[in-house]
Length: 453
Image (cartoon, rainbow, N blue to C red; front, side, top):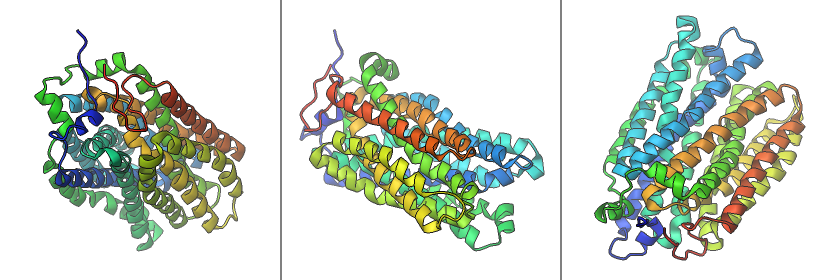
């Protein structure tokens, strides 16, 4: 007998099991604020990797090697994320969304606090970068269960006509968390001399994460379990092997999420990781100009994400996402060509950062939370997101900035444009195929009831 599977969309259509307005608001705040706090930690590391870590933890290397090593430690966090996504996603489908979200918050917060306490290379030698990599691995595992769980909570608590908007809130939280992380680094650097900032000042934003951790933990512990998960618990249809079920039943949905995520994260981290090093090494900007550019990129992204998420509730998820990928492919040629080298005005750099990461990535990321959830059955939605998104993260966010660094040191900006164009078109193609040849569980953009296995 084939086991019956359900989707969050079906459960939300049942008036008896539908979420109350108060629970929906509480869940949206928890998803937004919790992800904001998580990505404050994650993006703080990204910003520090661009402007600090090469000097603090990789002393003695050439500029190219030091930059590659610093950005490489950032990539390590993404390489372990598929493993964490599989483990935490499977647990989230078996024991509930809430418990995993509390765990991810604690793991990320503790790892970030310890980065702020880590001795430099000058103090303990090779052990410093080794411990930095270890803490980055812990951050990666924590982040691997964060976005998928937060998006599930937001969507599974949301009304049917607002799933795009509600599903965009974790993305908005991630972008604002990036703004706060980068802004804290910029504030500290502007209040002290460059020597003091490199010696100890950069640690302050990392140490402040202990306060953020306490608040986020209090918020998420008060969050109820989602009605979708409670319903499958009550009906005794919780999957015992969700990761194997999603691989066996919905391989096309997994592949779709993987390739779309390569596109979304590859483009996004091109701007917020690689373009920081590009501004410093190729354009000759100081740390302040680079950090302002990173803030502009992430703030524009945060503002536009909910707008595109809401738009997807009216015109459909796929059209908005496809626009984002096409825009990113075209803008790569325009934006990078405007940054010709030393002498480029900082204002132009900031505009390119905001337009690239703001419009293009926001149009993809805004509707994507609800879109990818609607591809999976509720019984293994967390596992599907954990495996598909985190494998895509490992390939897109980890490798695209590193490849871009290598290309940029040859002053071949045409190859940078081509790199982003290829990544964008991969994501566009995956979206088109998922729209026209989706698996039987896909919930279509017109909000029809999905077919279940």
